[in-house]
Structures are given as structure tokens and as C-alpha cells.
Image (cartoon, rainbow, N blue to C red):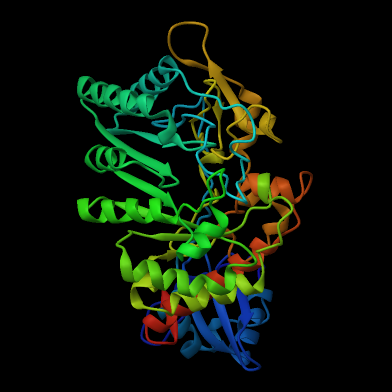
Length: 463
């Protein structure tokens, strides 16, 4: 049930004639032998329907029935947002002209103090690279100038890395203070964030909490799970250090989120890990992702399975807090977009060498697929960057409406084709689905049903 329908003339009882249109995309998902979930993603509308109503909708799409002959059904469909006088529009806008980002993600270093068993970047296996101060200043000046030119009120500096950014501490401090000075001189507000493994000294914790806007801390939940996955080169577990960081952030009232990686072995313990975090800490969100089979995790057992789905569902049921905080990147019902992330929207990730990648996961110019993500380099002069139009144009074109495999998926306008980098590791030529797709569909379906339940149990209308 995905055929585009022509406008339908309907005359619900007590109203004047008006043109009513079925959604351009309409999906009927079986719930049981007799019930279906009918979902119109671009109208953000869904309802529980029986087989007869689904059959009627199919005949409307085929032009074999008219709502004129069924005013009660027309009134129901109109009330729940399933039909209406307006056409829905698919997200389609793309950036134009040379990239003009207002967010700089500084990949400060490839050095790392841990040797996580599944690190997608295999951090620590090669001689570390460190960003130079002039590189950071050039990037900060560039995004601030773009913000001024665009009439924006803010620009952002995010600290990330193919390693642990806090290991390049002096540049982290210096670049932040430099960005703050640039913001003052330009009349802008500076936003800042840090992605960290949480292995920090007390002094660094205090500085982060008093200066930066937020942090995303990698932590896998139960201490024994963390210690099995995220170890120092010596083999010692890291949970004590990260737990101390979380406690320090809570005491300071600092805004942070937690990023968890779930392996095939630890998936059954996910509900316990989530319950542990929710009882003891105050994160703003907990993002849970199955292990990425790349880097040191390339030979690991697949975690993109039904076990992950059931563990995620069970984790959400552990408490009301868990239900509110838990996230999975591909299931985001409140979002309507044709881009999964900024890789198709001029992400500006600055490698330690000063080159520009559209993806923080591709931080090294020698990584697989680097030629598809690195699209810029410092200009020959004292400021600015030169961009490869062919590369950034191809990146901008990586939208879900251009992905043939996604065309018939009910979750495509919220998932938006999922992560381009991970898709390349599945199939570099033509993506044909992965275990993440099954997770996305299952968890998005859960979210739709929760919306319906919260709206009375019959239908949900997001508009």
C-alpha cells in the first residue's frame, strides 16, 4: 500500500465539498490476524485498522472506491489525519554552493588511553597524530565567519576524535579559549561539546564541567561489562574512572549523555545496565548502539539481531526514567528528514592533519572510504579552506529518496537511510539492507504504537 493516490472528492456529513487526498505513501503493517497498523509517515498519522478498512484504503488508492459512498469512513480518516485537503511534502532541500558550516568538529588526536575491544577506529594501533594549534584556529575562524555571514547568533566547536580528545588537553583548553574570544569579537554565542571515554583526571573533569556546554560519555553500563570491553593497554578495566567522572558531572549539574555499545555477548544484560545507570546517575539521554563491525570489532559476533531488539525493549520497561532516556540512532519517530546525519549536509570534521571529513568516524586520510568522505583541505593562504566539489556534491546526494533499497520502507523518513559509513561496510556498491534495518523497523513500529496508545489507543495524529 504505497501507490500515490489522486485527489479524492469527499462530502462528509454536515460539511461542504472539499478535495481530500490520500497520503502519497501509506503503509499497512500486520499486527495480528485481524489488526493492522496503518501509517502515513509524511502526514505523521497512524491508526489501528481491521482488514476491511485496509481493503477499503487499498481500493481508494486503486481508484476502485470513493469516499463519497462512505462518509463515516471519510470522517474517521479525516479526523485521524489520514486524509486531508493538503498534500504532504517530502524533505528535499540540499545545501547549495560551497560548504559554509557553522559547526567545527575538531578531531584533536588519534591517541587513546584505552584499547576498547571493538573500537571502530582501532585507536592506539598506529603512531598517534596530534592537531596543531594553527589548524584549530583556522577552523574556528572559518565557522565563526560563516555564522556572521549567515546572520546566525551562534557557532559551535565540538571536540571528538579517532582517539580520546582529552589526551590533547593543552590544545583543547587553548582552542576553547580562542573560540570564546572569537565569539566575543563577533558578537556571537559559543556552543561547545565533548565526546570522551570518561577516563579523566579530577582537574579535567572540573574544567569540562565549568567551561563546556555538554559532553557525551562512552560507558557500557554495568562495571563488569565496561571492564570486559573498555580496558587500558595493561588489561585493567576502566569502570572506576568513568564512574568517578559521571559522579563529578552530576555533582556539578553538568549536562551529559551516555553512549553505550552493545555486543552479542552483553546484549542480554542491557536491561540491567540501563537500570544501573538510571538508579545512580542523571544523564540527559542514553544512546544504545549495537557493535559496529569495523576496526577492532570487524571479526566480532553480529550484535544487530533480534536479541538486541528484545533487550532494548526490556531495558525501556525497567523504569519510566529508562523509557524517557533510552535512544537508538536509527529509530527517531519525531524526525522527518531525508538525511541520517550531517554527512550529507556539509559536516565539517577537521582531522589532526587539518583536512575536512564529512564523518567523524572517518578521521584518518588512509582509512577505507576516506576518498568518499574527505572533501576539503586548508587553503594555501593564512585562512580558509579549499573544497572538492565532486566529493561534497556526491555526499549531499546521499539522501534516502535516492536509495532504491529504502523506497518501500515505512521508516525511511525518520531513519533517512541510516549511516552512510556503516552501509559502505555492508556493501560498497549497492546497499541491500542489514541487521540495523530490522532493528530500525522494529523500534520505529514500537514508537508508533506508543504514540497511538498515548493518544487513546485508536489513532495518532502528529500534525
